[in-house]
Length: 589
Image (cartoon, helix red, strand yellow):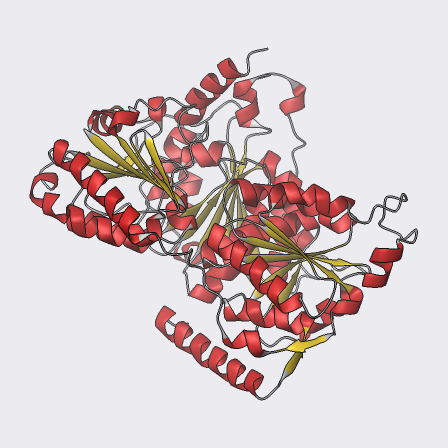
């Protein structure tokens, strides 16, 4: 397997060859212009479902040397896959659908990417420019002549829409849309009429790479903000805590944050959505802060600090213990992608990416004091528990010793998201989840995209943790995983229904039950004519799970594997029970 450095060299050589080839041509089709831009940004996979208004463009995709078409089972799953791909590859994910019926099916996935700040390009093949103007009674329309109804709907969940209606403007429109996507880390929408796909446009713009960087901060204003933060840290006598959240990853500042931590020695904690934004093996990392749901030691250390520097915050209910942070604005600094808050003041257009290195330089003098501040050890030993049944109390710490560096771990809304919070993950491991949008079934499609990105990056293993209820929504995406030769380990937590809903409301109601499928037959059912090697297991006791996790063949992830883990329907991780109690009070009927 190629190392990351080798893979990067191959990619650079390929792009250089591609650019040289382009220089020999003066024009390129609109469709290939778009694909070239995506390839320049490292996109190697496109997700979606074919439809008659995108088939001509899909010819170009299939013939492209560097971008693979990943046919999904439906458009919603395709959007989820693009989301997962973007999170791991740290570039944009791309989903292609057809007009009307296809794009509307994808909207939930696009909305989730918007909510969680993930750069996804939604490309829609639409009727010709002539038909857009004359509005005949075409299939996939509403039958009332409104050809713009769908783009009005999707505009609620995108930061930019581009409607390609003439070839002269198309290159600039494409460049602007993609730039908005990668700089704002949110979805954009491009419509591609059938008669625009093969229109020839100049290649000139392709010689200038698109940049993911936002406009530079105003230097004087930035220096003023840095000085203000320094003054607060000095007033706090170096008693500073750093709290990292999801946008540290979304906006590509993990390196800058690590440098800040190294040069200042400030203690660091993360939110649930920020888990693995900082390596959890880092000596100054203390665990997860989630308001009232935090471990008492973590809660005391974070809330007792004289100054908190929050980086990339997304303050949703499940990310904050139902808004139970006990942090005074007077002791808080917030760094975001496009603004900074210092106590009660907000400074727009002062983004963290450019400011963090300058802030690090200014704050490094606090190292001698900060390094003496104690940080609780983030450990979770395997508990002793009587009985053979697999409980969440035992299951998650046991998995903690199974994880390795460079693992990618995908967790579903509900028991998995909450169960893994207090499990220390190895340095270099990456966790992705969807805590804010919380669309059940997201993790399955996302796992497909994440596994493709992982293969590009040389990551070792991909693991999915999903409940039986959630998996029933999107189980079809196991099929393209198999067909694409991907080898995730899929843990199906079979607790006979929707656990998080049971504890919020309706614990014994039948609407929270699901049919009990034969999960160990699922990989065979969805295999492409049994062409690919698969393996399934069912474990009902601690001993059986231990034996499986200790098996070197299983742990090597040399083929796609599914593990059905049978658990009690009314067992759940403690953080979920406490969150459900808070949510139930907030949703009181």
